Image 1 (spheres, rainbow, N blue to C red):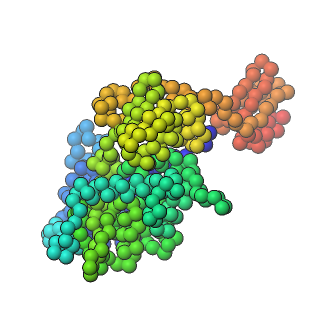
Image 2 (tube, rainbow, N blue to C red):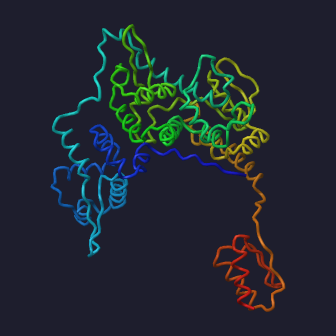
Length: 452
């Protein structure tokens, strides 16, 4: 069965993957430097701050190691690797093979300015007499959740979304890059990656969409560094405050409308001015992927008899549960169903794995059962894995069969050769027969010719 793995990297992993020239351009922005500093592991922050006012002279690796206790060597390695990935540290090795590190000069000077002059917001919030009443933090959080669910529902079944719901062409292109497939004269359908995407938690889904949005920006003629710069700037805005749209560049103006589709910002129009209001999704963009501050409360209860009760009013939740469970009936705030062999087989054929289903049930366990260990009964999780294993009993591997060897020495030499190439699948020493992978057949044939 084909396996599709969607990796949702953190924001700083995306920053680290940029070319050196793009990174140097980012570090010309003070806000980027502060956002990068905030994202670093604690030990990496310590190194940066201790070297911030040191002259251009590089520091040796041995000197840095002396700053760490004996039991902190693993954390030291993680910190150094991260600083090198982000080009905050430049590593050099001299003729004596001594390793030295030097702080990025642009990053260093901008961080010094920031500490001397104090933090300045990217843009000032609009006065209350212009914006009138703004949504409360609770209302804004609810808006972000609802908007994100509309986004997911449009991915699952466009026909179920509100007729007034529309998404920009940029967002639809993100869908087409691995989550949806478009067939002639048919509605878009979910790919295997799309099914797996829906089983992720909210933070992981958001990172995936943002990553794809940035990665295809060059197709739209936009520099990825400009998008990353603006996204990191958003993390310095205050959740719930209004900011004037006129302060945005043309590229940022287009981007803010795309982000509104995802629920990262809320757009409002006044009599003369228009503004955007960042939600918690936007201001937490530079936080680690493991942050749980925006995760929704669980809603699923699974019993030992494979019965499932989901206390939710969400159409998205119901649609996701239908991927791997048989929904029997739905009340206004309750979905009742069961996990069956047939429903799981359908899920496995779509590319969803047993581990992903179990992880989804555990992450979305109702508070009444979430505190229990395990939150999903063991007999249910074990049976889900066994039913998946039923579909993987036989694995087809292209191979070649060899027999009628002229002597035992040639046979044993052929077996040894196949083992060295990790291509030996089966051998019968009595009858001198063996089976090897097709990928080493040509090498094996040349080897046997040499033996003759």
